[in-house]
Amino acid sequence: MCVTTHRAPTLLVRKRASRPLPAGRSPPGGVPGWRQPLGVCVKNLRRKTLAAASAMTLGVGLAVAGGLAPATAAGPDTTFLVLAPQGATTGKAAARVAAAKGTVVATYDQIGVLVVRSTNPDFATDVAGAGVESVASTAGLGTALQDSETVEVSAAEAANITADPTKEPLYGQQWDMPMIDLPQAHAVNAGNSGVVVGVLDSGISSSHPDLATQIAKDKSTSCIGGTVDTAEAAWNPTTSDHGTHVAGTIAAAVNGVGVAGIAPGVKLAAVKVVNDDGYIFPEAAVCGFIWAAEHGFQLTNNSYYIDPWELNCRNDARQRPVWQAVQRAIRYSSNKGVLNVASAGNSNYDLAHKLDDFGSPNNGTPEERENLTNACLDLPAEAPGVVTVSAVGPTGQKSYYSSYGQGVIDVTAPGGDTRYRTQGVRSTLTDGILSTTFNTATKTNGYGYKQGTSMSGPHATGVAALAASAHPGMSPGQLASFLERTAVAQSCPDGVYNPVPLISTGPHAYDATCSGGERNGFYGAGMVNAYNVVK
Image (tube, rainbow, N blue to C red; front, side, top):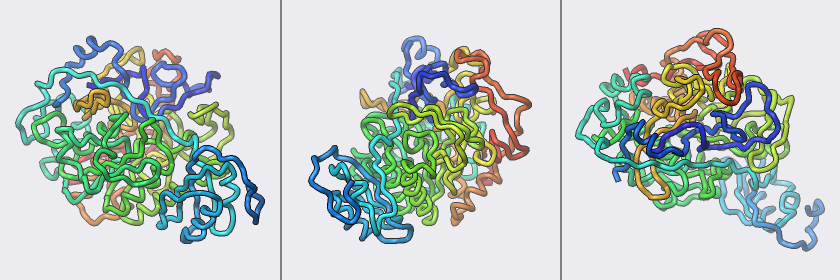
């Protein structure tokens, strides 16, 4: 079982500079040098103690313009995104790629984007010209993902015969499900198999007893490198079980084994966008959104951010092609009937007031980018048409790590908060989110805790899947609006919110101020509610 504290981040970790950070921007969980990941599952440093305390059961098993470049030594094999002008085909761009000594490895004519590899060190300048709007190397633009171990104990409690989600063996540890009125919802509608939810993540274990029947294998793929590989082994997890955990929250089967998912009647599609080195590159995300659009998905869950900068700035020449390509892909998927749901992030950052970015990029020496504007966005969470989700803990209050922002957060959902009971002194493991796991070392399936907006996002996605099941025919915009209208409004806390004043990083490390009224910066329209969307 995977149990979490904040001693070793799991997903989307940004390594911070050694310089002091501004007030309110300290690294989470008292771990210097780390940005809180979107999904946090932490290694069990005290295996015996934690296993006993949690009592959890696991494991059921540059060329001159207009001319040719002079001969130059080959450079490293590098991936590029080459964008044709908006609305144009990629034919001219492909011809320029060939002339610039590049090879097209994936063509997305739907959005005018080519994924290209080249060893020409001057490729970016050689390819420029008619038919090419912009080009960017994606080298160094991968977002790091790190994993925790799974701690295995007896499987005796994980199996039982039941048709009632509340009687699933581990349902008693799923405090998050009553919070969104899941039992009442299942009495009305537990999901329709015609609804397909794409999990853009690290893959899903197709052998997990709570997931094996839930996966649409014919709609699953790997998108690593920006290219499609539909072999089952390609979209299974290899170095991270993050996607497996996310998948269980959305749609774990009600089958007398383990945990209950929010929408067990729907189908999951694994879309693997995290490579074996633990990085998410923009070309993989583009591939994922296009795949979802072309294969009849109603929803995608996106518990990650794109490129190593916390904020992707459209007015930054290094980042603009990435923004353009991802935005085109998201817009295309939306036009094809896909609602994309994304996690807000775990930096306790006010996304409505972007002033600085001190910890990016996470693949090299961090830069101090100050005086930023709203041209800088957290992708994909802040892309137009995406539902952005913040996180709450067992009290229903904002999780100490969750980012927020008036006009940015659309809804909130359970994501876990293992620090609130002790005001930050230590972790209470069972206040995380319990779901399905896969130990990538031993290749065994199980159950474990993680926390983060990576966990709140799947709750919102699961509820949206129930809504799509109960009310077929909604457009993505209608479905997003319905999700918000049926959410349970939550008020801002009074004054400065500080749930962890005793945390080791300082008494004000996680101060946050909520703005707004019934719809506000912490919770958006409110807590998603499974029963309200199906009744």
